[in-house]
Length: 177
Image (cartoon, rainbow, N blue to C red; front, side):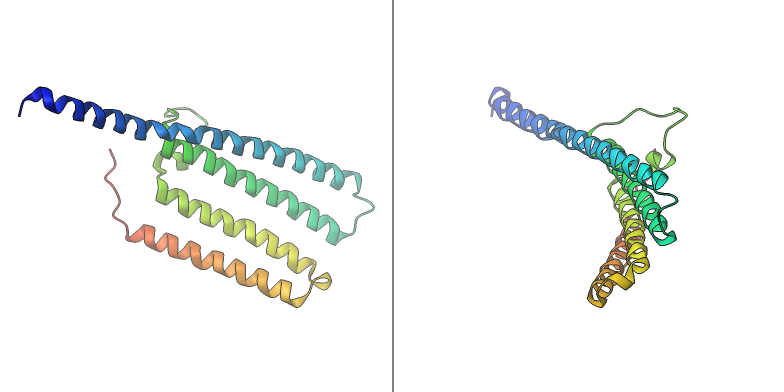
């Protein structure tokens, strides 16, 4: 077989590889959307903070605690968004080239899809914990069924996170370069 006959197949294969690898850039609008969602959370945080400050003397201790837990919840969700945006972009789209930057997150140097999954699972447990604490503070106003199901769902998050971490531990770790 002549080498010239193989060239069109090689060109098609190279084009297909380039197209498939280049498709990772389609995720960029998704990450930009998450940045917009984070902006929404910043506005929500500021509204709740103003509500807390202006209502300080009119609010009960339980109401203040619920608002503060809501603020903590927003911060934790924002942290989750940052992990997904930065870690996902770094892992699946392109390197950020932050080596040596004084603000480079410590976790970014060893992020991969499995590490990102474990970090996300633990962040979700933290967020769920805040929601569960808010539920328990407000337990007198809620049905027992609501309390039960929120606890069961929280426990499911914990079991899932432990399973993800265990599976990650079983996976062979790639050598550091």
